[in-house]
Amino acid sequence: MYAHDYTDGGNDMPLEVLLVEDSPGDVRLTQEAFRAANLSVHLHVANDGVEAMAFLRREGVHANAPRPDLTLLDLNMPRMDGREVLAQIKKDDRLKTIPIAILTTSESEADVAKSYELHANCYLCKPVQLAAFESLVKSVNDFWLTKARLPQAQ
Amino acid sequence: MPLEVLLVEDSGGDVRLTQEAFHAVNPAVRLHVANDGIEALTFLRHEGVFVDVPRPDLTLLDLNMPRMDGREVLALIKNDASLKTIPVVILTTSDADGDIAKSYQLHANCYLRTPVQLNAFESLVKSINDFWLTKATLPQIQ
Image (cartoon, rainbow over all chains, first blue to last red; front, top):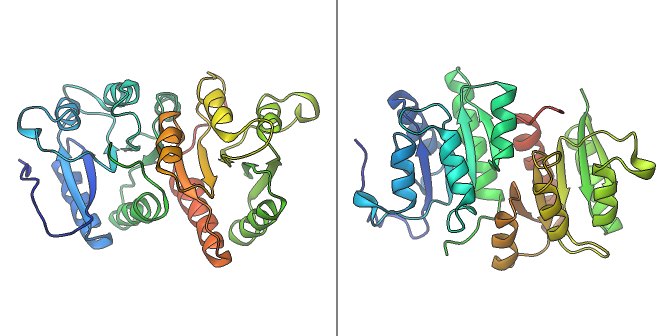
């Protein structure tokens, strides 16, 4: 369903991005947009919140998973939704410094407020138009992976 | 729909440069300035001369300042139920890993290093505008 061979070795300083997203179409579009924006990005995919937590805690098949430099988190997913993943990450002393960008189709003010309350680092509404989506991924890359200083993996 | 941005910065030069850069990038931005942490919290809590000030859509926070530094301001904002949703961008000359880690631990929304070069500074302000004030969805004022 996704690669968990973490030994790519293609780039000296890859940027590890974890995408937590249950829609395969959105996963594909995000992969393609990052490939166009920045070849140094290693995009890892978790298909729901349970898998995201297993990745971040390096459990099971994720034993050798890298710590993400940035996580893109959908809100509405089966099994464990993005709100719960966000709350767990930001309460966990080992995980809380990982920047979490909420990336969702929800434009609900309550979802926006709740996400910032739970210490999401930012909230992004997924645009429906493909060009706007590609532009958003480019912005995420330009801001978070180029301009922002990210915490070093501990 | 003005965008209210609070800049917490003790250096008069950096305040001027930030004002000029926002003016060039986005005339809808209203930049408010607090010169240290105490003034920032007074602004955010609408106290004293700040009784009628708006709630910021975004706050840019320096770390090293007299009276109350940025770490303490950040901790107070992010532990205050009425203020914690305000996005706080750390904007500092410090590139210390310890400052970066500590800021994210205290729930800074992001950490940016103030560049020394003037054109890089303008480019950074443009990035802040393009990402935070254009692409990101910000919490509505409660």
